[in-house]
Image 1: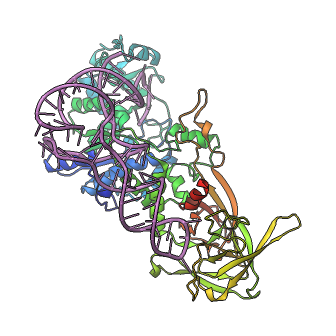
Image 2: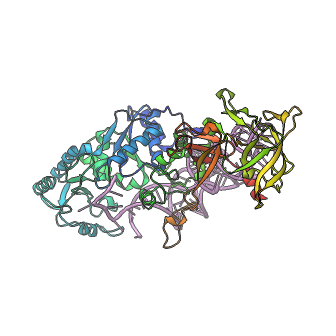
Image 3: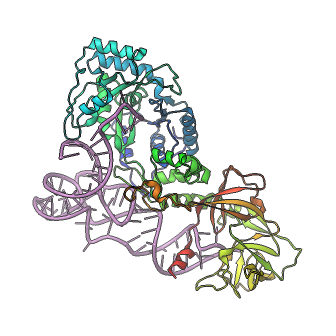
Length: 564
RNA sequence: AGGGGUGUAGCCAAGUUGGUAAGGCAACGGGUUUUGGUCCCGUCAUUCGUGGGUUCGAGUCCUCCCGCCCCUGCCA
């Protein structure tokens, strides 16, 4: 069950087809209550695509007063591990959902699954095939030609039962036999051409250990697991439509509770990849630092980057659910992240690329403390006390010796406001022997204390700043898209998706920060005014924080300047 | 090529029984602003993949064609 009371979909949008279906099933009395499940295979880390499914399954259960199970689809011991189980649980919890006691494992059903398989054999609906994998593949036919029935298809029930029991008992080597459903080798739906139900696999399972040497396959396991758990609505992605016929067939033959599978389009996002294979490759080949690298579309990566779970939930709700293939612009996700952070991230000041400003008419030994509102639109949220002194740092980009038109920031002869502090006017530029700018010399207007003047004089620019003598240092990791093009899969002949990896997806700078930022609260994303949202990284040390940039602020000036 | 799925603006997406195209993101214009942020106002589909048909009336019904996606694991 969802711990989050979900409101109706945003924007006055109508219900998606799944919610409409559930509402109608409830209204018609087809179901008294609904039951969903989120069924990951523990063979990798959860990513944005899973978030869509999690929000759907848990969300729908919460909205309609039903329940949602967390079920691990762990039928392939070769690929699965408890490391993944643990990370999945952590990520689902982080996203904001709880499953209470409803944590299940397909592997817990192995015994029951086995019994169901024997029942199929007894009913003449399944048989042991002793062909090799290659022979089976060849006999399956292809898209246009029907398959042909193999020599073992007509084995007697007794022989099948005996063989299957001996498969379980470990009498045969891997690959010697498989159990197949006896359906229709000529079906136009390839899934129905006598699908494999069990294979012999001597592998250590992360939960059942070595208790089994045969393991059931997805098509046999999933529908039965759903049925046993009383899942009313089994929601999965579109690539399983072909499997629905088999899903229904198994439950029909067994005469057990009929769960219903409904498919929806999986999530695709520009500028990233979401396939498990590619994600693994990024990690294993060292293109990123790990599964939780802030550039990764994994939930653990997002978390480390400073993306709030609320923003992810909002995103999933706003993109909706349909059956049409989609590719959502990454910018939509960013918009959701900014929207949430704008409201909740406390403000602070840091300078990423500092240039020194000396205020020559400000007393050398004076220090003043100014109040920076933590939330400009909600004064009741309080302030951050910021020290101010004669020498400060401002952003290098905020000063130009030859200011272009519409440049509202600091330039020779120009007056600007230092946020919450004073108006300053640029007098001159001090250079070192090499001719590089060493400092910008300014004067301040003592009457402008706090950032306003008695004569109500307007300045167009307001700059963030950090007092030089009080400044701390912080490592700041500036992230950009992992891929340089919208669709990383769209690649020249002979290239792979790595072709468009963005070489500048990570830039590390040493920033000067307000002293209040020296030991930030873990996990709390803050806004560096005029720059973006930044989240302390676990790599932080006392007095030497490391920040990850979760998102930039919109930058209208960049647009204006680009246009000329 | 056989089966299945799907096509509404740059992107996501509503559109219950046919009645004259929601909303969000982006973009663009303007106002407010001690963040060139936020906020506010305005603009942004004579048209729903294409052609034909039924109808007083079609995104919604019928039909032809076209595009894209999925399926030939002892993966899920």
